[in-house]
Image (cartoon, rainbow, N blue to C red; front, side):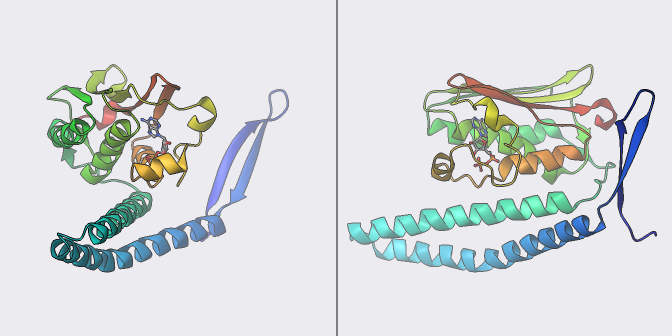
Amino acid sequence: NSDKLLEFRVMPYAKNQRLLIVRDVTTYRQMDENRRHFVANVSHELRTPLTVLQGYIEILEMSAQDDKMQLKTIQVLDQQTARMCALVEQLMTLSKIEGAATLDFHESINIPALLTQIESEAIALGRKKSQSIQFKMDPKLSVVGDEMQLRSAMSNLVYNAINYTPEGGCIKVLWKKLPEGAYFCVMDTGDGIAPEHILHLTERFYRVDASRSRDTGGSGLGLSIVKHALSHYDTKLQIESNVGEGSQFSFIIPNNYIC
Ligand code: ADP
């Protein structure tokens, strides 16, 4: 039946034998597709009222200059609305990335230019925490694909490093050619992550410390976005971390995507 979506898996069975497992995943895929559409639509609908709210909060802030109590309340409103806006943006990005069945691999992305943009934003953010931010990149190394997806993947890793590294820490970003492909790596001297959490980090809404992540404005969607963006390049996010010492998030884009 051509309407059915089947998943095949071959497993070792007995000596010199293999077991072929065929699973009908039609309903599962349909449900997942419905969930994605629902999330995309809700996030899109939330965007407009949130922008209107932000506008009115700005007006209130201007008219409450002398009233300290009022100003404090308005600041909280402002922070929480900004958090909601960021969450909605992340939800929309994730839905878009999950929904793209394949990428158009004809478009060449100027990665050094993209990383230069991320670098200046990172330096501005890092300055607030007196962090040292160092980018080292091969100026000629670019890949094909979708710019939005790679920008999301790379910037999420860089901003996480800044968020989860205390004041005065150091963040290093590398983009260079290895024999296996184009290597991207973000190293930080931050809190680090305990081994039992590492396997779950790319699940939607997974956060090691929800209250900590909430303080930094985190939604728990960033690494999920990274995982989906990388799946288009047949590659995976590698995470190495030591609690109290820091973390390293990296991936290799295979040679056939380099242009
Ligand atoms: P969030 O929006 O909460 O940052 P992510 O999906 O980007 O969500 O990350 C998931 C969780 O992984 C974070 O809540 C945080 O606990 C942990 N994490 C991510 N990056 C780092 C890092 N560089 N150092 C320490 N912990 C990290």
